[in-house]
Length: 125
Image (cartoon, rainbow, N blue to C red; front, side, top):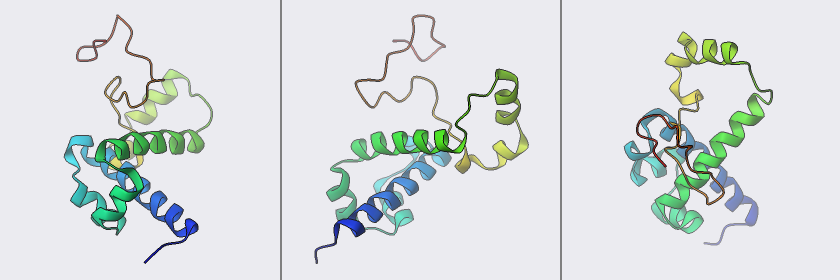
């Protein structure tokens, strides 16, 4: 059965939302295709027809999560406010609402710059 363009777009958005949430909660390597399809209420076939691979889905889910977080808090906080929010009990208790991508861990697109030479351990360029 063929789905409409509108339904395909809704399916894609549902998969991206579920993937971004699960990856924030469990980490990228902690989420398998089975969990992604179950959380989105989709089939393996629909996921692969939309994205082609888990790697491509990860790229788009990361971009989706970053864009969503940017829409949620468009102003750039000062370091003190950011740190207070990051270390708050609310942030700790709701990992699905946080963007926890470690620095330099996700280099999904060629436009993402490599880490600087003074990188934290594990983020060497």
